[in-house]
Image (cartoon, rainbow, N blue to C red; front, side, top):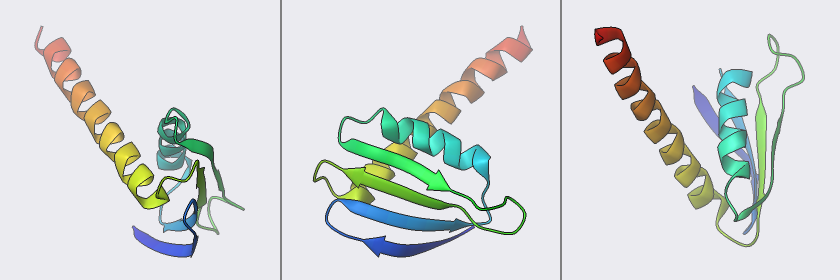
Length: 92
């Protein structure tokens, strides 16, 4: 995975995420939209096999880098919770 900041202002960011698909971007977008600081969170992918997705985030003035970092922490926490629950379920 490679990241390229295409554009960043005080409350907006365009971020190209090379090597990723809808799987990660949909989860990230969902978590971002649940954050009250986020006004817009979306991504564009011209074609899954020939283009890399570009994530766009607009906040209410919060630093989009910090907002994205917070969203990623939430995703990691959700994955950790799933691992715990799954492990208990398969042990039973």
